[in-house]
Image (tube, rainbow, N blue to C red; front, side):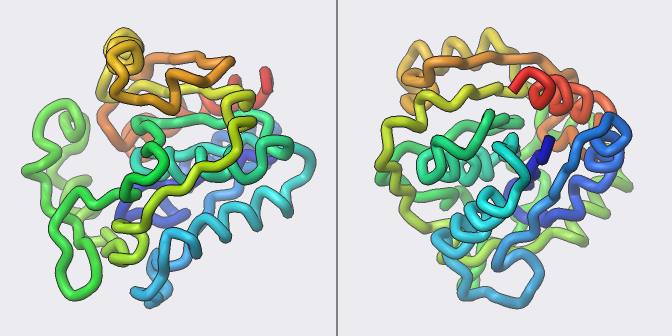
Length: 228
Protein backbone atom coordinates (compact mmCIF):
# COMPACT_ATOMS: atom_id res chain seq x y z
CA UNK A 1 0.00 0.00 0.00
CA UNK A 2 1.11 3.57 -0.63
CA UNK A 3 2.07 5.34 2.61
CA UNK A 4 2.57 9.10 2.41
CA UNK A 5 4.97 10.37 5.08
CA UNK A 6 4.85 14.03 6.19
CA UNK A 7 7.45 15.17 8.72
CA UNK A 8 6.92 17.94 11.24
CA UNK A 9 8.49 21.38 11.58
CA UNK A 10 12.08 21.98 10.38
CA UNK A 11 12.20 18.60 8.61
CA UNK A 12 11.82 17.42 5.02
CA UNK A 13 11.26 14.03 3.45
CA UNK A 14 14.80 12.85 4.23
CA UNK A 15 13.80 12.50 7.89
CA UNK A 16 11.93 9.32 6.93
CA UNK A 17 14.84 7.52 5.23
CA UNK A 18 15.20 4.70 7.76
CA UNK A 19 11.44 4.31 8.24
CA UNK A 20 10.88 4.20 4.49
CA UNK A 21 13.52 1.51 4.03
CA UNK A 22 11.89 -0.62 6.73
CA UNK A 23 8.45 -0.13 5.17
CA UNK A 24 9.74 -1.22 1.76
CA UNK A 25 11.12 -4.39 3.30
CA UNK A 26 7.60 -5.10 4.54
CA UNK A 27 6.16 -4.77 1.05
CA UNK A 28 4.72 -1.26 1.28
CA UNK A 29 5.34 1.76 -0.95
CA UNK A 30 6.38 4.67 1.27
CA UNK A 31 6.59 8.17 -0.18
CA UNK A 32 8.35 10.68 2.05
CA UNK A 33 7.14 14.13 1.06
CA UNK A 34 9.28 17.24 0.81
CA UNK A 35 6.88 20.16 0.66
CA UNK A 36 7.18 23.74 -0.65
CA UNK A 37 9.29 25.80 1.72
CA UNK A 38 11.25 22.79 2.95
CA UNK A 39 14.74 23.47 1.68
CA UNK A 40 13.84 24.71 -1.79
CA UNK A 41 14.51 28.35 -0.96
CA UNK A 42 10.80 29.19 -1.17
CA UNK A 43 10.50 31.26 1.98
CA UNK A 44 7.28 32.65 0.52
CA UNK A 45 5.59 29.23 0.66
CA UNK A 46 2.23 29.14 2.40
CA UNK A 47 0.17 26.56 4.23
CA UNK A 48 -2.06 26.33 1.15
CA UNK A 49 1.01 25.48 -0.94
CA UNK A 50 1.89 22.62 1.39
CA UNK A 51 -1.68 21.33 1.49
CA UNK A 52 -1.79 21.38 -2.31
CA UNK A 53 1.41 19.32 -2.46
CA UNK A 54 0.01 16.74 -0.06
CA UNK A 55 -3.23 16.51 -2.03
CA UNK A 56 -1.28 16.05 -5.26
CA UNK A 57 0.48 13.08 -3.66
CA UNK A 58 -2.85 11.65 -2.50
CA UNK A 59 -4.29 12.01 -6.00
CA UNK A 60 -1.21 10.38 -7.55
CA UNK A 61 -1.17 7.41 -5.17
CA UNK A 62 -2.15 3.93 -6.17
CA UNK A 63 -5.48 3.15 -4.53
CA UNK A 64 -6.34 4.80 -1.22
CA UNK A 65 -3.12 5.66 0.62
CA UNK A 66 -2.39 5.89 4.31
CA UNK A 67 -1.38 9.46 5.18
CA UNK A 68 1.06 9.86 8.06
CA UNK A 69 1.57 13.23 9.74
CA UNK A 70 4.26 13.76 12.37
CA UNK A 71 4.02 16.46 15.04
CA UNK A 72 2.62 19.69 13.56
CA UNK A 73 2.13 17.89 10.24
CA UNK A 74 -0.65 15.91 11.92
CA UNK A 75 -2.71 18.90 10.80
CA UNK A 76 -1.53 18.52 7.20
CA UNK A 77 -2.58 14.88 7.24
CA UNK A 78 -5.96 15.87 8.65
CA UNK A 79 -6.41 18.63 6.08
CA UNK A 80 -5.85 15.96 3.44
CA UNK A 81 -8.58 13.83 5.02
CA UNK A 82 -10.88 16.86 4.98
CA UNK A 83 -10.21 17.51 1.30
CA UNK A 84 -10.12 13.87 0.16
CA UNK A 85 -12.25 11.85 2.62
CA UNK A 86 -13.09 9.24 -0.01
CA UNK A 87 -9.51 8.81 -1.22
CA UNK A 88 -7.64 8.11 2.03
CA UNK A 89 -7.83 4.75 3.79
CA UNK A 90 -6.40 5.88 7.12
CA UNK A 91 -4.68 8.82 8.81
CA UNK A 92 -1.82 8.14 11.22
CA UNK A 93 -0.78 10.91 13.60
CA UNK A 94 2.69 10.53 15.15
CA UNK A 95 3.25 12.65 18.24
CA UNK A 96 0.79 15.33 17.17
CA UNK A 97 -2.85 16.31 16.90
CA UNK A 98 -4.91 18.24 14.33
CA UNK A 99 -5.31 21.96 14.81
CA UNK A 100 -8.95 23.05 14.87
CA UNK A 101 -10.63 25.03 12.13
CA UNK A 102 -9.86 28.74 12.20
CA UNK A 103 -6.64 28.36 14.21
CA UNK A 104 -3.07 29.08 13.02
CA UNK A 105 -1.23 26.01 11.76
CA UNK A 106 1.91 26.18 13.92
CA UNK A 107 2.82 29.65 15.19
CA UNK A 108 4.61 28.16 18.19
CA UNK A 109 7.93 30.02 18.18
CA UNK A 110 9.40 33.40 17.34
CA UNK A 111 9.43 34.51 13.72
CA UNK A 112 12.54 36.20 12.31
CA UNK A 113 12.93 37.64 8.82
CA UNK A 114 9.86 35.89 7.50
CA UNK A 115 10.63 32.42 8.86
CA UNK A 116 10.38 30.43 12.09
CA UNK A 117 13.84 28.98 12.77
CA UNK A 118 14.50 26.02 15.03
CA UNK A 119 14.42 27.53 18.54
CA UNK A 120 17.07 25.29 20.09
CA UNK A 121 16.54 22.43 22.49
CA UNK A 122 15.34 24.30 25.58
CA UNK A 123 11.61 24.15 24.60
CA UNK A 124 11.95 20.38 24.11
CA UNK A 125 13.74 19.53 27.32
CA UNK A 126 12.33 16.40 28.97
CA UNK A 127 10.46 13.49 27.35
CA UNK A 128 10.49 15.10 23.87
CA UNK A 129 14.26 14.88 23.49
CA UNK A 130 15.33 12.42 26.20
CA UNK A 131 16.32 9.75 23.67
CA UNK A 132 18.45 12.06 21.50
CA UNK A 133 22.15 12.10 22.36
CA UNK A 134 24.29 15.19 21.94
CA UNK A 135 25.50 14.18 18.48
CA UNK A 136 21.94 13.64 17.28
CA UNK A 137 20.88 17.01 18.66
CA UNK A 138 23.70 18.82 16.92
CA UNK A 139 22.90 17.07 13.64
CA UNK A 140 19.20 17.91 13.93
CA UNK A 141 19.85 21.58 14.70
CA UNK A 142 22.38 21.90 11.87
CA UNK A 143 19.96 20.44 9.31
CA UNK A 144 16.83 22.20 10.60
CA UNK A 145 14.96 24.05 7.84
CA UNK A 146 13.34 27.34 8.92
CA UNK A 147 9.56 27.23 8.47
CA UNK A 148 8.16 29.96 6.20
CA UNK A 149 5.95 32.44 8.02
CA UNK A 150 3.14 31.77 5.56
CA UNK A 151 3.15 28.13 6.63
CA UNK A 152 3.51 28.63 10.38
CA UNK A 153 0.82 31.31 10.61
CA UNK A 154 -1.50 29.96 7.91
CA UNK A 155 -5.08 29.51 9.08
CA UNK A 156 -6.45 25.98 9.10
CA UNK A 157 -9.73 25.58 7.21
CA UNK A 158 -11.75 22.38 7.67
CA UNK A 159 -15.02 22.10 5.77
CA UNK A 160 -16.10 18.49 5.17
CA UNK A 161 -17.52 16.51 8.07
CA UNK A 162 -16.83 13.30 6.18
CA UNK A 163 -13.29 13.62 7.52
CA UNK A 164 -14.60 12.10 10.75
CA UNK A 165 -15.37 8.89 8.84
CA UNK A 166 -11.70 8.38 7.99
CA UNK A 167 -10.07 5.95 10.48
CA UNK A 168 -7.35 7.54 12.60
CA UNK A 169 -4.45 5.97 14.49
CA UNK A 170 -2.57 8.10 17.02
CA UNK A 171 0.99 6.91 17.70
CA UNK A 172 1.91 8.13 21.18
CA UNK A 173 5.69 8.59 21.61
CA UNK A 174 6.55 11.08 24.37
CA UNK A 175 3.05 10.81 25.86
CA UNK A 176 0.89 7.79 26.60
CA UNK A 177 -2.40 6.66 25.07
CA UNK A 178 -4.02 7.26 28.47
CA UNK A 179 -2.84 10.87 28.47
CA UNK A 180 -4.09 11.39 24.93
CA UNK A 181 -7.49 9.98 25.88
CA UNK A 182 -7.65 12.40 28.82
CA UNK A 183 -6.86 15.36 26.56
CA UNK A 184 -9.53 14.28 24.08
CA UNK A 185 -12.11 13.78 26.84
CA UNK A 186 -11.26 17.20 28.30
CA UNK A 187 -12.02 18.88 24.97
CA UNK A 188 -8.41 19.81 24.25
CA UNK A 189 -8.40 18.00 20.89
CA UNK A 190 -11.87 18.66 19.47
CA UNK A 191 -11.18 17.17 16.05
CA UNK A 192 -10.28 13.75 17.42
CA UNK A 193 -13.29 13.77 19.76
CA UNK A 194 -15.50 13.45 16.69
CA UNK A 195 -13.58 10.73 14.84
CA UNK A 196 -15.70 7.59 14.48
CA UNK A 197 -12.85 5.07 14.28
CA UNK A 198 -10.01 6.16 16.57
CA UNK A 199 -7.19 3.96 17.87
CA UNK A 200 -4.17 4.84 19.97
CA UNK A 201 -0.91 2.92 20.29
CA UNK A 202 2.12 3.45 22.51
CA UNK A 203 5.68 3.91 21.24
CA UNK A 204 8.47 4.20 23.79
CA UNK A 205 10.45 7.09 22.32
CA UNK A 206 10.82 10.83 22.29
CA UNK A 207 9.16 13.21 19.88
CA UNK A 208 11.22 12.17 16.83
CA UNK A 209 10.88 8.37 16.59
CA UNK A 210 11.82 8.39 12.90
CA UNK A 211 15.34 9.19 14.15
CA UNK A 212 15.49 7.14 17.34
CA UNK A 213 13.09 4.21 16.80
CA UNK A 214 12.68 3.89 13.02
CA UNK A 215 12.19 0.11 12.97
CA UNK A 216 9.57 0.23 15.70
CA UNK A 217 7.75 3.14 14.03
CA UNK A 218 7.82 1.36 10.68
CA UNK A 219 6.32 -1.73 12.29
CA UNK A 220 3.41 0.33 13.64
CA UNK A 221 2.88 2.08 10.30
CA UNK A 222 2.98 -1.20 8.40
CA UNK A 223 0.43 -2.70 10.78
CA UNK A 224 -1.80 0.36 10.30
CA UNK A 225 -1.56 -0.05 6.53
CA UNK A 226 -2.23 -3.78 6.71
CA UNK A 227 -5.49 -3.15 8.57
CA UNK A 228 -6.56 -0.11 6.52
